[in-house]
Image 1 (cartoon, rainbow, N blue to C red):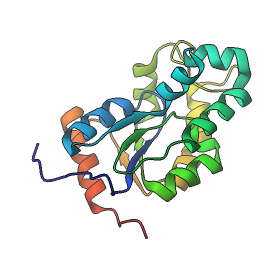
Image 2 (cartoon, rainbow, N blue to C red; image 1 turned 135 degrees about the vertical axis):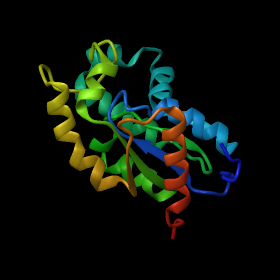
Image 3 (cartoon, rainbow, N blue to C red; image 1 turned 120 degrees about the horizontal axis):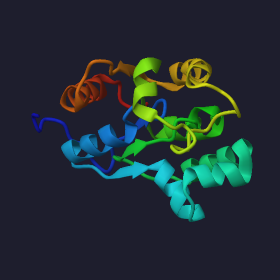
Length: 180
């Protein structure tokens, strides 16, 4: 991969949104390495703040309690020039999304639901935030318009390996308009 891209401390953040299992954390780490930039995973921030895994927080606090914790973690971010991988449910919080939008460019990483199902396996063990009994397809259909509303760009990653996905991510990032 060419080292033509960089992310500097004064640059906007690269914010990755999308369904669980789409590769936000994996591609986020790869992009941060390529851009010589810091990396933040908001799911890990939530877990560290609460000393528990996501599925434990969801089980103990319910969906509303988890979403409140997620919103607080995201709204506490005060960084620039950082690659940020968000939890898949962050798009339910208009406040969190506005906070992210003011500080960066939002890229929606998307995969077909069939590929997501193969990647994810046990949704409860993965800490996937969803209503009781909700299928992955139902969750995908519910979130898709939210991702579309908040994203500056969408990358459909079906059929791409990590190198191809990273290349597409960096090219899309480079094509986005700067923050006003």
